[in-house]
Image (cartoon, rainbow, N blue to C red; front, side, top):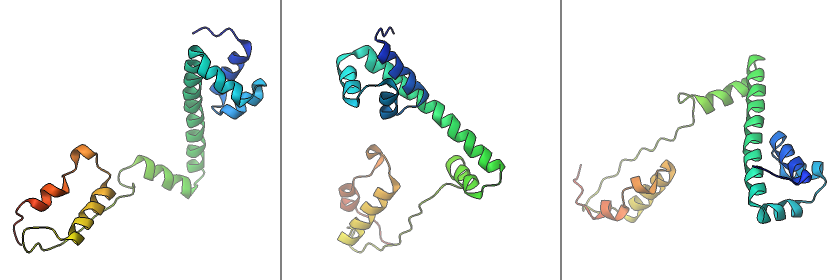
Length: 144
């Protein structure tokens, strides 16, 4: 991808090093308005800045992980906990929902419907995987 404008090249280079638009604009001597106008007007510049920001984020993420690992090696318990919670299912935060409701007439009460909706919301499942509440409440549910 060929960008001929030298200032645009400086912006792209700065975004690759530090993926922060304000910082790149200051280092290049342009305003944020100019940056966003160039992105709007020039497809190649927009694509190049998007790619530079993505690469810059990878670079910063690598740096952050390196610092986190150094902190863990130094015995920083907060860093160790963070790493385990982020990288091990044994230590990740879990939500457990327990419910024991008796259904008398084969239909859910308003309270039971509300609890089910809340539980489904907490589970954060895809909409495709959710059982429609109307289908559940209209089915004949056996008594326990």
